[in-house]
Length: 335
Image (tube, rainbow, N blue to C red; front, side, top):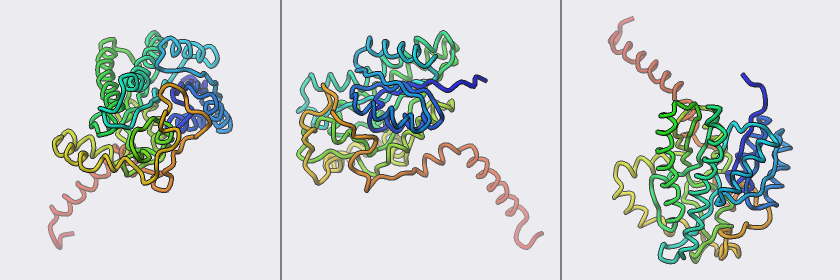
């Protein structure tokens, strides 16, 4: 077993889920390559990673540019060593009805949220395949299975990531490669995207409740990177969204049509940055990991705890069932 510190790459590392993921890996003493567009937020993430015990390196990079991603991957290995884990997390979107989204806006959201995953995966595999080791974590969403109104660019991108992952898994199996590819399907999260993504709605965009803190997602990403599970669902809302969409898609559509437009808008007006958002230019400053919904966000998920411990829970359930059957077999009043 190699005792060296893990080398991890995180895209979208300056804010939201990426920021929390950086902290989680840094707590293990990992060496972390921080990829993203916003220099200020990346530098703040670097300081947090160092404080947590990690060894970070900042690499400003637009994940929509494949050559920039490849250059960043080479720089990570030059500075930190062979990459063990690559986390594709970067995203952007436009909150709007589809007919109000301009072609260049939709294209840009897709280039970042979908093609950014493709280019990141390609750069990681270029290094991992010859070694036949390493893990790539694709940060997904329940919306990879169930599209919702006002989020056509994001939902389309996450559906595309899921299809891409399924194709690539087949190729890795064909090669008998030990590189592991996993996708983490997340629920609504309290991240700064609702402040810095472009919105054309009359009110401030918000995640569909119930909402979780980004640290819940970070814990799931970290766990997925170290366990060979092909896909992970996080949060009960993600589970019933995915399962419900499979069992009764027509019912899900009717429910979302009735509730999800108003349900994705808070009472407050949009922020000043929502008008332009971070589609074409990075948002300035350092918003950190959390968005403006701390008051309604859950810091834990019972479903996610159960998913991590499903083997032990299954054994416990089996033992309980055997004990119950034994009691029934003895009958009342028998020793």
